[in-house]
Length: 150
Image 1 (cartoon, helix red, strand yellow):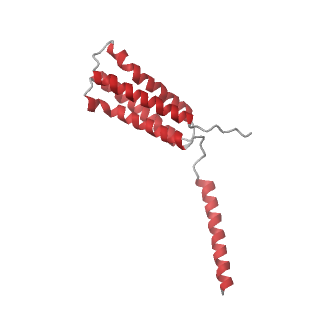
Image 2 (cartoon, helix red, strand yellow; image 1 turned 60 degrees about the vertical axis):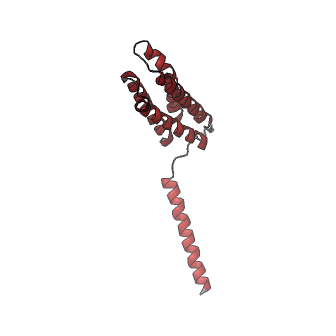
Image 3 (cartoon, one colour; image 1 turned 180 degrees about the horizontal axis):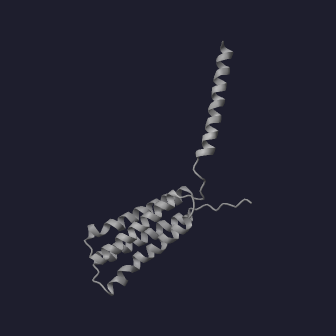
């Protein structure tokens, strides 16, 4: 009796192992070259993009400033989300975020030549752009370099 129970448990355990192995081979997420630091940094950069998108309503900026911050904030958020969710293209998406962070820092000075720019925009864009640049550089530094096997 004891041997039949132990044989049955062993066969169930073997079947469970085979099913788990098939599941991991079929449905596992593709491996990425990103560490946890890179993924968390990309997520924080996306959250900084959310702040840039909603900040005009907290800081009562003008029409041009609002459009600039909303568009750039939504694009930064989208690039961060695609970088986290996608298996490929992380480097290019983070390079785009780096350029947008630089744009956020210089955009008040460029817009001031044509439009009246409020003082909160200088501070918000400066800090937001700096945060996006720092998070992007941290995400790029957190990438693991894998050797390609041929």
